[in-house]
Image (cartoon, rainbow, N blue to C red; front, side, top):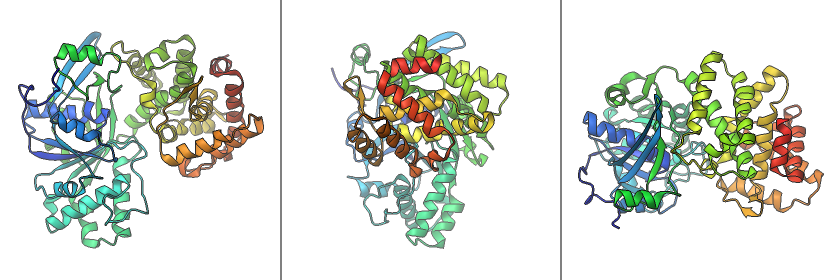
Length: 484
C-alpha cells in the first residue's frame, strides 16, 4: 500500500508560506492546521504552514515524506447527531528541525510574506533559560529560539515596522502571549540586542493570549490498519479528534481581518477578555483529565471513556468536578454545571479512544497549572483540603514511580523531574518515614509549584497518608476508601 503523498491527493495545492508553527504534535495538526486548511479551501486564505520541530527528533522528516499531508478523523456527537469525518489536511508545506536545519530555520525569517507564528510546546515550553545564547545553534528553549529568529528578521528588513507578526501561542498557561513576550524581552536584555529591536518587538508584533479546546486522542493505535485499508493508503500521521472545537483569541481586533476563521462558521472567538473561558475550561476539562490520569491508570484503566464509565473511577471523576472544582469558580453555577455535563459527554464520545498515557506528558507542570489553583482556592473558601484532588496528587507521586503492577510506565517529563523521582523511588526502603520524605521533597519543589507546598497546612500529612494507603493497599482499595 502506497504512503500518502501529493501524487495520490487529487486536490493537493501548494500555498505560500505565511505561517511558522512550533510543534508538529497531534493537537496542532488536529486543531490549528485543520482550521488553516478550512480557511484555505473556503475563504481563499492562501497560507501554508512551515513546521518547526522544537525538539531534536527526526519525526518531522517523516511528515516531509508525506509532503506535509495527513488524515484527520473527526468523530463525535453534535446536536444529537453522530458525526464522523475523514479529511486529508493540506496546509503544511514542510517541516524542519532546528537542531539539524538551523540555517534554514533562520532563512524563514527572510520571507517577506511571513505573517503568523503559532506554537504549542506544552505548558513547560514557555520558559526562560538563562544559559541560552544568541550564538547557540539552536537555543535550548522555545522562547530563545523565537527571539533569535525575530532578531534575524529585524536585521533582514532593517527594522521595518510592517514586517512584524501576529504571534499566537497555544500553550495552556494563563496569559500565554504576555508570558512569551516578556521572556522574549528578557532575552533582548540578556543578549544586549538594543533598544531598536526592543522597540520593534513592542510595536511591530502582537502577542495574543489564547485559549484552545479540542480533545485530541492522537494516533488511533487500535484501528489504524483498518482505517488505512478503507482509505487505500498508508498514513503515519493519522490523527483523531472530537468534533467540538473552540479557539478564543484575546487582544487587538486587527487580527480578525487577516485571520477570518470566524467567517466560515468555525468556533473562533475574538475577545478583549478570555479569563472566564479559560478558567472554566482549564479547571474543569483539563483539571478532570489531569486528576484522572494517575488514579485511573494505576487502577488498571487505559482510556478516558472507560474511566468515566467505570463505576468507581467515574464516581471519583464526577466528584472531583462537581464537589471540588466547581465550588472554586465564580461563574453562575448553572453555567458551570452545564459545561461540566458537556465535558462528561465529550469524555464518553463513543468514537474516540483517548488513552490516558497520551494525556500524561509533562503531568507535573500540568498539575501545577490545571489542578493546584483549585486545591488552593478550595482550601481558601472551605477552610479544608479537597480530598479527591489531594488524593490525585498522591497518586501522581506514585505514578512517577514508573510501575503499574509490574508493568513499566513510559514516563515523559523534563529530565530533571524524572531524575528527581528516579532517585526518590530507587532509594525507597519500604518505610513510612521514607514515604513522608518523598512527599516532603516533591511538595518542596518550589521551581515546579512556584511555592513550597509543605507550607499549606495539612497538605503534607494528607498526601503522605494517601500515598501510604496506595502503596500498602493498592490503588483499587485506596480509591474506594476515599469515596466512602
